[in-house]
Length: 502
Ligand code: AHR
Image 1 (spheres, rainbow, N blue to C red):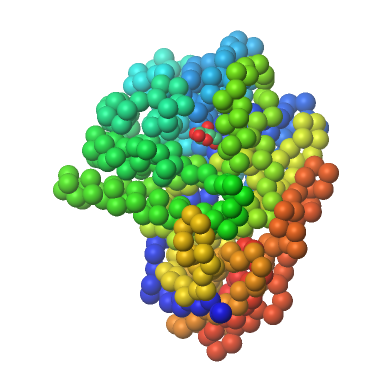
Image 2: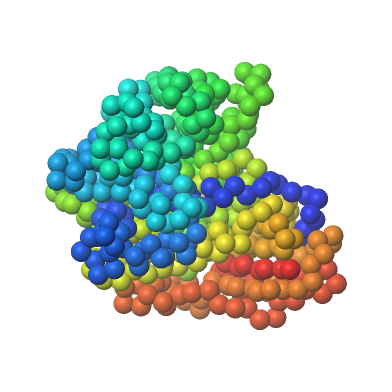
């Protein structure tokens, strides 16, 4: 019952675009307020940014940070979020039934990114729900035009002389979802996205634009939506988006552990759909994929609130504060593997979200910040998953899941860095059995195991909490060896593994 695969430097999938390690900050719950921004917090700097959170964001290794939503963006008026703080209006946020104070806005977001460091890149979403072409152009001019126009000079008057240099824009959010404020049909949205893109390129032909794809593969309009939207926008946009969240259904953990099967088929189906439209249009261009929302999310908890009459319009309420277990982190790691396995076409991806809201980093107002279980796979993948993804075709023992049928117990990928070192990322989906692994390394010229780290626990439900913030962390695995070009390891039951070879 050994799982096996062969790695060869000649068989490459593609280069990992650093943007695959993106994340997402939405004005939702406590992601912004008491998450990254809490002026009264003991660690806050002069701009109200929590330094304890900032340190964790850097350690996590995030790159592109999508903002300001999410569903929030479909009611967003960017003008509310700039200028003197005392003049900014309080607004109803229909998406999350909250009150938005606009205390933190566009300038603060760019300031936060600059503090995170040079690897952090803005990814700005536009409101194509309640707004349209004119407001998108105004925001683009305010953010990016150097000077000498009303909006560029207004930015300077607001204290931001230097343009924000936002190069990556989302043309709306989840416009296929009936829950979206200003929801549209594929044709309505495709036309609006095309005209917004065309106009934005009149300001700057080099902007990179993401058209909205489906909110999940299970949407009734899936694939037809992408085909219609891309038929309108193909030559005007660079990316089509994908969103996916996973949770166990009816207590079926075995299917939950195989969630990446859905994620990989979603990616492959979107690639096929985009390429079909490209072929019909006789285009030389390829549309890449922006998987700009992905995670484990116990979304049914939110649906209960959504389906109720509750509307108390609170400021920064506790919403979507999922606390992740070891099992969740293993599924999460497998979702990362799925993204890397498609590095040739998935060139942007955003973990939704960054702090407090379905997040790897949690905080307590006035109190500490800590790492959830999902923090570790992301930080390790971002750190060691840079380079060329090698083609991994596993020969693995299988198990049977209700949702996906016969499924490999091993899910894996491998990334070769510029210096020739290789990192294998692997998940054992078995809840009960350790999985022996053999990897033939042939022409790779590797001689040693630098590290085998695993996230696994005798209690698969173990979590990090405010009371016990360091209950779960990866541990070193002994006994992993590389002899005569063959790597031999044992993957613990229900585990996420990082094996570094040099
Ligand atoms: O990330 C939480 C929400 O999930 C986002 O606001 C929305 O785009 C998606 O439905």
